[in-house]
Length: 61
Image (cartoon, rainbow, N blue to C red; front, side, top):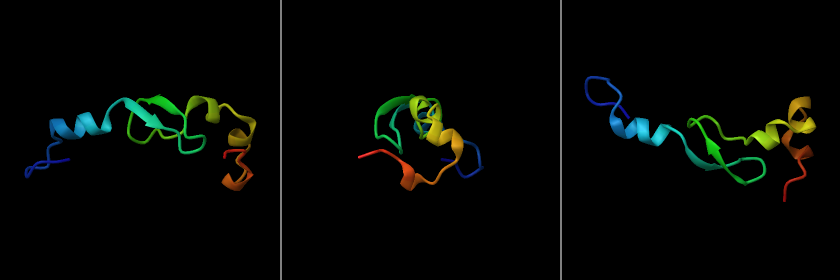
């Protein structure tokens, strides 16, 4: 979040910063370093992820 002058507020740093998030691929909780990190290391290390295949090839469920 930004204040009227455009500066980032302390709330934004807390919201966007490191925290536990659910992986969008396997749904496991993992320590995310920033708001854009939504895939866990285990999923990123998988052959399917690195191959670039579409999400419907996932084994999740």
